Image (cartoon, rainbow, N blue to C red; front, side, top):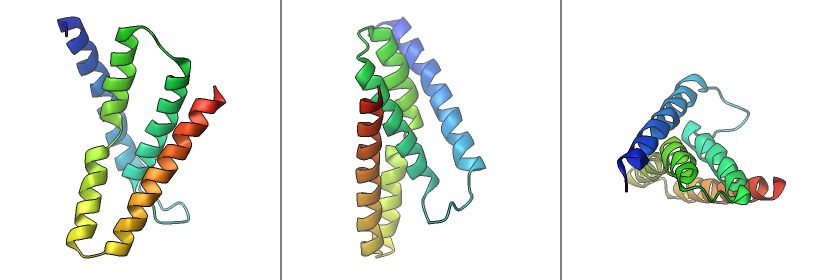
Length: 118
């Protein structure tokens, strides 16, 4: 990995992190049902990942910029795992199961939708 690749990842991941924090802090309203902001971020990231995969970029710098840097930092897998851990610790096993299924299934469907829209 070259220094330019590291720089590309650092810059794009910074923008992904800023956008994630902005969404988490500014969209704390209920939208008719109980859904976590981190889940919404994962849904958005999955949708855009589907679009980008369907575009089939060959340029390695674009892959590092968008996939690894921006979307890697924007999506919140660690927050998702932490939410599951909290539910497990609080012994809310049914909610844990449904939250897991909700995020995995909806994220996959949005990836699929993004992929086939392009």
